[in-house]
Image (cartoon, rainbow, N blue to C red; front, side, top):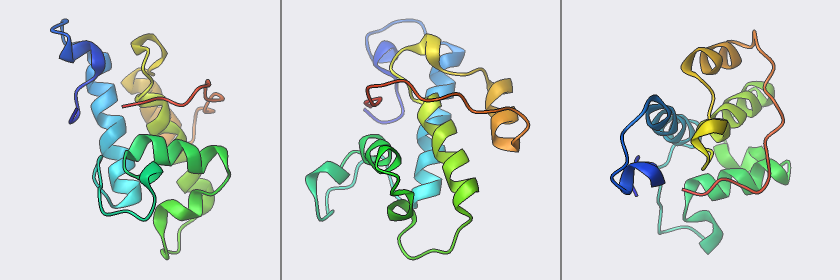
Length: 120
């Protein structure tokens, strides 16, 4: 699906929330150093980036996202949470860009993610 949301693929009007979705995908790609889809992975549940990130987040295994890189886990968790909020299936749940910036800066608390995992 590239960086398009489900609603934009159904010929609905493109909105700011579509841009938030795209930003979330790019953020997760940067954090994980991989593209949205990756086929040469050891497990099939790692093919779709957003699903793999969510599984690692729920299992408290964020270290898997960065392989052998040394990173600040607090910052990693913040980036992952913001990315997952941005790619929620329901556009109404996606944050505004202002809130995204505040969450990334650490000046706004990041709400608990809803269940189930977002799919993309």
